[in-house]
Image (cartoon, rainbow, N blue to C red; front, side, top):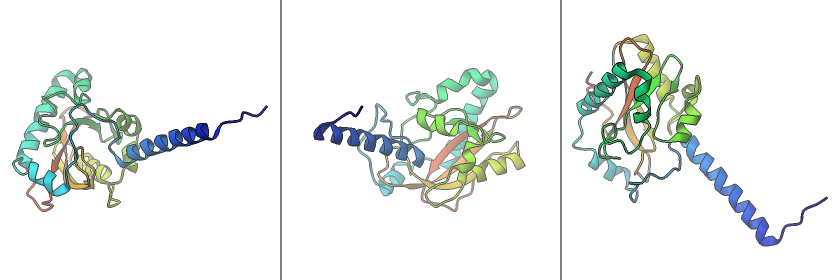
Length: 201
């Protein structure tokens, strides 16, 4: 038995398939195409850097340290709040400040994320080994490799990738702040075109 589609039905089916492929493509890039309630018209990389100009790398460290203390106190019970994109404690002034996520470098995976599709893709064991930025760098793998070498010291890595609210990729520094006495680390971001900076701990 064969099913015959009208021409307009065929085009609708093809369009739906195309949209699904596009959404999958966006998730592969690192930030899924899931809109957030406060999304604004996207701005250029230069404008994004300007918005971040008042943020210091030490601010990001302090932010991660605060998150580490919350995880140390409440362990897994604290995780849900780090996946909430509207939690002003853990993502103040989005997207002009850093959210914080929980990661496990020993398992090379993320445990929390504001984008459910990213968490679904990179929350699997060893999934972050395969993540590459737009320069082809394994930024998360490099970051976690240093964390595993120096488990009690915050570590930094560089990344060129997409960022919420930016119409084009931006340079950023990735921070992994270990939660001492646990297998967890807090990941945070510092968006800046300055690739040569003195990384605070």
